[in-house]
Amino acid sequence: MHSLIPLSLFLSVVHAIELPFHVRTGSSVPSSRLGRREVPILNNGNAAYIANVSLAGTSVSVILDTGSSDLWVKFPGTPPTTTDTGKSMSLNYAVGSATGSIRTAKLEFDGYTVENQAFLQVSDSSSFSTDSAFDGLIGLGPNDGSAIHDKLGSSGSSMLNRIFSQNTSTSNYISFLLDRKNDPSHSFTGTFTISQPAKGFENITSQPKLNVETVHKLLEDQQHWQAMTDKDNSVIGPDGTVLKIKTIVPKAPKGQLVAVFDSGFTFSQVPRDMSDMIYGRVQGAVYDSDNEWWTVPCGQMINLTFNFGGVAFPMHPLDVVDDNFKILDKNGNHVCIGAFQPITSAFSLFGNFDMIMGMTFLRNAYTLMDFGDWVDGSDKDRNDPFIQLLPLTDPATAKAAFVSARLNGQDTTGSSQYALLPADQQQHSPVSAEEKKKKYEEMVLSRWPYIVTGVLVGLALLIGFIVWRCCCRRKQKSAKKNKGFFEQKSQTYLPLQVQGGAPQTPQQQHQQQPQYGYDHDGGQPHQQQYGYGGGQPHQQQGYGGYAS
Ligand SMILES: *[C@@H]1O[C@H](CO)[C@@H](O)[C@H](O)[C@H]1NC(C)=O
Ligand SMILES: *[C@@H]1O[C@H](CO)[C@@H](O)[C@H](O)[C@H]1NC(C)=O
Ligand SMILES: *[C@@H]1O[C@H](CO)[C@@H](O)[C@H](O)[C@H]1NC(C)=O
Ligand SMILES: *[C@@H]1O[C@H](CO)[C@@H](O)[C@H](O)[C@H]1NC(C)=O
Image (cartoon, rainbow, N blue to C red; front, side, top):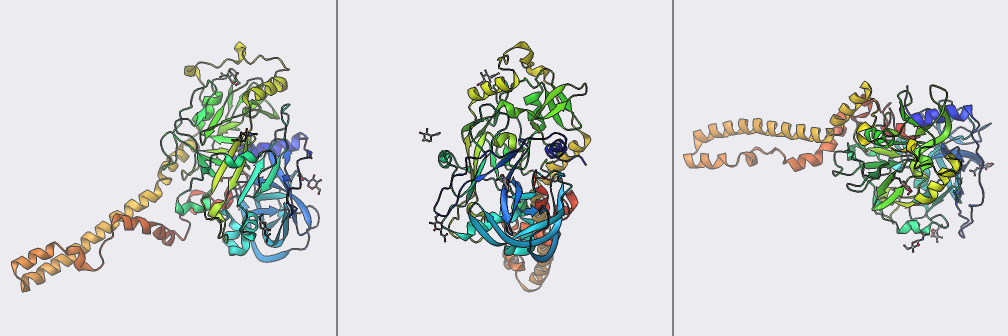
């Protein structure tokens, strides 16, 4: 199955080319009396961001994934002694799956200690990678999205939930700074923090707070770190104008898009029209239908800016046109990848979001994610979760870096070969039959809570009507027998009160509708039918995020 492109690319390429990965040290500053510090993040070829966690006394390197909520590990060498819960399960991601037994062990991370942390011990992770760059993956999403928590209850809570509920007087947030390799202008190293900002980036706490867009109650295990773009100003395209894209999220206001922030995706996943608008006007752009991405000349500098909370986030041109994977076109020429690729396998059939901001976006924004009342067992912070983003890319500096890295230091960005084609000559990428079908399904599925509500209201009215007819007939009959004309008449004005089981108002129906859905469908109405797979829609959505 062709599912997640970035990952399959990552997997094959990591193997093929020796991706340089060494930790750049220097950013791990002891910062508090408790011995807490920033956790260095290892950048594996701009394709995965990894940190060390100690589990049962053994150091394991795990991919940091804000798009899922579980921890799985394949111990290098002989596994240390851990406690078996007697349960096993499978976590499926957009690319790859991890199967094993759920165990518990002492976990240490960033100076925090968690006793009996539940995790999945995997014996075979070959569907992920045969590379030894990492031993597992840690999900940094909401606890409600954890499949292990789902299975074990509170003893299966995610690492962050356990850390945050340890000390209720600290803020429930994480932050991470992802560095960029092969960028001559780059000045910091990747770092991860809990409950404190990264040194030198304290300003993030005064950035606008982006509300986390919540998904429908029935789909809450599909909740991600997601927020809305600015109204009528979501994305500024290569020619400096706003890209006009319609949202697929039924409750999103017109002119705004819902974006998921997911560090598990190497490439950002955007609506197909948006990807076409970004790359389709580049001379020499070719759409690669096998990989579902655009390829463009590596010297093409493309301006692209996303807007959140009234703040502009310019993308580094080295991230917009990606040269991390040394791709060749059909003629054997070196080309670069349009790293804001059309969303295909990760497309949200339930209309929960429009796009996924992966590493190509996240390198351009220092990111803070506050869990607020997502933390189970923390009484103090009962606020809604939010996201704060601090722009990291200065367009002028970035341009200079691009010229140096891609154009041999000669600023030819203004030359005719790099001029954008007129808008009416923009190329459009082909839409597969499967994708058309998905879009159609989304139209229906994303509205199903409303459809179910409608059907229920209709049903209630129908039943009400039948009951009313029966009662009324009986009443009328008895009335005709026993009462006078005036009393009969007055009764006809009170049919619903007389019946006892009065039909509910539409509002009551609406409130009860989720319950009905659960009863009727055994808790997870959508999953089996629509391929979120194996009965646990959220766990599929981890690394890279979303099941096909
Ligand atoms: C993880 O730990 C190993 C050895 O314990 C070390 O060599 C490596 O640099 C560490 N990686 C990170 C990202 O800290
Ligand atoms: C909880 O966190 C606060 C603030 O960081 C700290 O002062 C306090 O000592 C912590 N309490 C425990 C029990 O760790
Ligand atoms: C941090 O924010 C303050 C106030 O908004 C501003 O004056 C200062 O320049 C900012 N510093 C950085 C490094 O952005
Ligand atoms: C792209 O951004 C650079 C740097 O800000 C600027 O010099 C250039 O004019 C922009 N190009 C377009 C087509 O807007």
